[in-house]
Length: 353
Image (cartoon, rainbow, N blue to C red; front, side, top):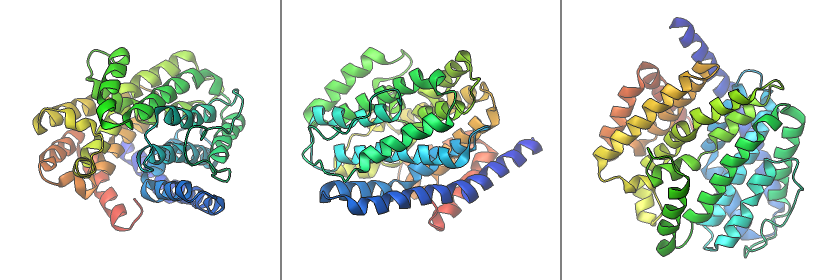
């Protein structure tokens, strides 16, 4: 047990001390690149996505510390892909556009970024009313492709699963931002086709909305001798339980602002706070169980513990009826989660999260 504490302490130290500065450096580079974006709407949405969602890139970059991964290029890969994700989310949600064809075309950028064998393209804005980004989105896509080519020798073994996750993610994003009178029906019909029987359609939607499975598979691809059964083990462990926990926690803390803004929130579909607590606890238990089955289990368990600590360290997690659910999740997480929760609170106070 003491050895586990030592390993986790080193992981946290390297994460905050080494990875966070690398993430900030990459994001600053993209902010500078945006100075050359001629379209003010695209520039505004891109800048807002970086400044308001930095913690997404920070969290995903934990996989730069997975054994065998070359830290600096992998952080660059994660930040590029996550920045694509966050930018496109803003374009679909915050720019006053409601066009499914435009959303699907935009999200081709995710698939092209993750498939260096596919022909590069620049027509992502084809059906979108704002189009001149000064090369910003193509640059992000190109960076992902080059890092895959140069630093992930086992990528061919994971590419099929990575693209499966990317396509599910893109489908979700293209449907969840439709008009209010369309999106629920379309999402429900889509989820019913794909979901396993033990998840509600909204829980399945949440699981598809995470990039963590893509990042973990890419990290595993740092090894050229990666085997097919190892790829399947990772996919099964991460989807739907770890990825589902990730996004359900995100929705859980954002309930008030989403209700005020009229935004879709999958947690709203639970009957009451009690059912929400029960299902979040189930996702947490399953995430721990699945993480323990993988190679380097302490790393994956630490990821699950970190998700819980990071999201529940947000003051929003203790507003109103969410307080009891947050306390239950922290108790279920155990002693290490409580320590990580304290660390995350301190990082928030210092503006690092």
